[in-house]
Length: 238
Length: 375
Image (cartoon, rainbow over all chains, first blue to last red; front, side, top):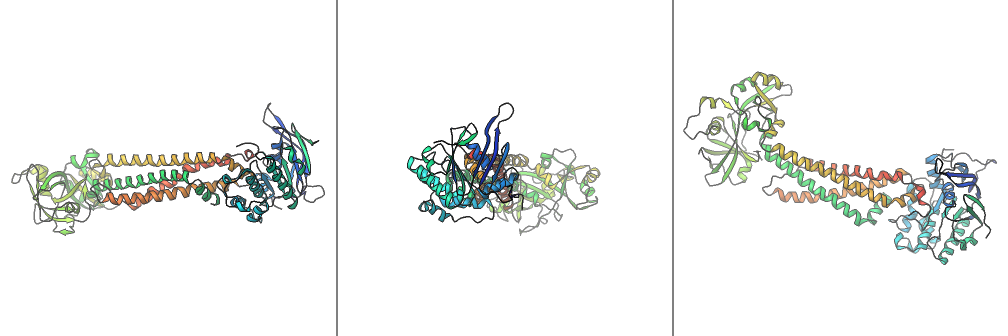
């Protein structure tokens, strides 16, 4: 066991697969001017599941992704990604955790402008690590844009950019996929296609997927739906 | 390098713009270095080529005009010969004169008066050495390039002293931008005091020279020698400052070059600052994806190194080409490989420092900004 992969933390002694948040509270700001961005949030997503979180702007959806993605440490509570507690992993350990075990899909893809679609998928391999990555061309075919492999982001449509973004997040073979407003810049039909793709990828590759969105039309693709209001998470009643 | 090269290719117009600024500065650097070397050659190559380690001038003489003002007695030469560590000492006379050759060619001369046979008496590459003819002179090769020939007679303006070109030394021998002519000390004294041919030269003038040329080993105590001979010594390198205009020329060019280095480092720094700010969103995304900061910093520095090396190399190439053309003209210009290499390396290293100061911003990019609608 190295510092990057601490011993399994579950009571039974086996690694907790997927994503587990236990009583996570995140207080932002300091002094008198503080905001409880997350208030005792508990959430467990197993591999193969697609969980959606809806809620108004500023309700804490982005904070949820930040703590689940090891970008921020919670003020209290525990975040366990693929068996690793983010608080005990250390700074470098969290960078490695994001590199090797977590995939991010950002709004409108957030691709690197200089890189072709295929190179976007090759980039994570340059960040180090010894894990075998998936074949970029095969993965682009899987998300349906193998014919645009040599196009740069500005030569792709919004939906195509998002497909490249999904493929890029999956190329490292992560156990947890965090998706931030994937349909923000897409029309209705493209939104359906993208979320259907996410659900399919989550299932076939056994990835615990959390999607933050305020697009209620795509929720039927998801296994569970939660609602975030003022930092509290609860089941969403359509 | 993966990202660095692809970005260079992707934003090639922007990088080409930046690269051409660096390349133009490199061209200017090469030309300025050629000009400095050329001016140094023009100013002091005659002194540089003398087998001398120091000159003993008159005590208290101003250092910037030592060669034109100093008068020392011949007796100082014997005093210097006796100093421990001094291998040889000889009288040296220095004066500038206007003249014209018998074929009507106007020539300006730096007359170096030396005792024939002494250690400062040069060995000509062509023609005869000083000695038999008291009015014979050995000139710089550069005078022959200007059309003077061995066997020509040169007449000093106003006083009408006739000098015979009997030999020439190899290469450029100039002093204060004027070609050097070596002549016997007695004739030099005659010209120095302005005596027309046949006019007597006083005994006092016969006993005076400009300085004592000294060749010594490393152990010589110049201060002790100065005390004994009542002189003031300048090492050969320090004596260059006494050549007309030398200090002003070299310090002006040095100032321009220092400014150019500073400007290029700042311009490169400013470019990469803007470039890094433009890339902030993608840097945040890559850091969120688990890119180590070291990887991103290394990649950006490699990118600036590639840009700097390529554009400096292009600039040096153009500069050397232009310099080769200038070298054929009468401009004081000489390309010197070591000084060009030093200039190019300094340009790259300082540019890299400027870029480094800019790309450290990468470490301050918060990967959290990759989330949400921050664009």
